[in-house]
Amino acid sequence: MSDYSKIKKYTPVFTSDGEALGEALALYHRQEDVNPKLKLYETYLEIYSLEMGNSSYVPTEFVALPAADAESVELTVAISTFAKETWDRTPDFVAGHRGKKEELPSGEQAALI
Image (cartoon, rainbow, N blue to C red):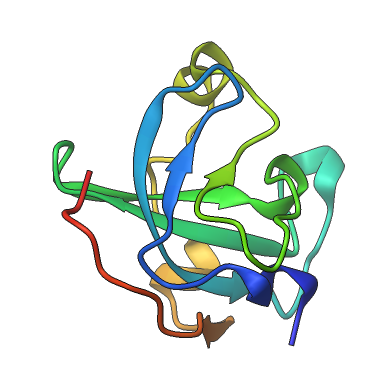
């Protein structure tokens, strides 16, 4: 269990400048070839947005560690950085089922953002 397992499923996720991205769904852990210099991060938070109609996969290096009673999750980057990254693409290790999926503990499901 990672420190990010404090995040509950369906917790709203925002950028550092307050833009709503969606709701947290799961964590994915890369089992091999971890190299942040090549943007091959170890763990990703899956965020689903009903408005966008897809998931984003944000490396946990860019997710602020939430307090246990947090009602939202905040990224450490602004929407402009989020938009420049390729986080709207499913990482190869997730698509190829070569990683480990960690279900987030159940939270209260709100209307998906």
